[in-house]
Length: 163
Length: 114
Image (cartoon, rainbow over the protein chains, first blue to last red):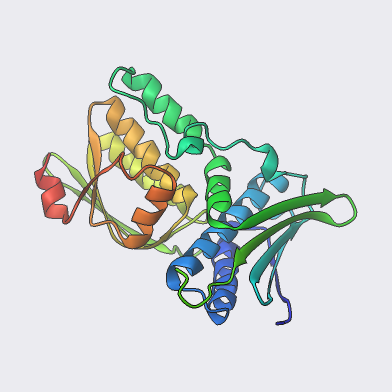
């Protein structure tokens, strides 16, 4: 079992690329293909963005600690912050995305309501969480005052023949 | 000012705004991307986004594109995508937006379709 790798960065948007590169390097070592590595980067990006925007409320308020570890079956990513509790599980999926795609309306809808619906569904946080829920195999969130917030995202390792 | 990860070039054509985007679009530069697209929508409501050079895009970048689309549609215009990269197509598909945008193999074909 590989040792846990840890990176701590200030909660700033410019650090997101560094977070992605850190996780991508570990995911490549774990044997994931390019597409899955992109998925993992995307999930870490969206989770980090949510930490800055929702847990801390703005840039420069606190740190983001991101770690990953590999065992026989799983690639486990953990993001920690000390901001306000923000449970992704309490955020409903964007209404129409939950049904398999963004509903941009039908021909009989007025143009205005159609566009407003789509804009509502694209609000910050919801779409990123939709990506995380769809791309990771397991997602759990815990929050307590002593240890802060912790988002655990697990991706099953690809075995021979997996895609 | 931090170095931007994205390169955005705008060409103001006769009937269409052609926007060539390459690099990485994430939360660190989505506001810059959004600002440029808003300027574009302020000039014309028919826009072609050439996205073959986009190596990475997150939901933050996607929101800017949807905001542009929304503004153009309000004015009976449209946003067409020219040769979107594999990553762009994947993120659009994840969001269920791949059927919202008309996609063309080249910017010439997209511009010519208006």
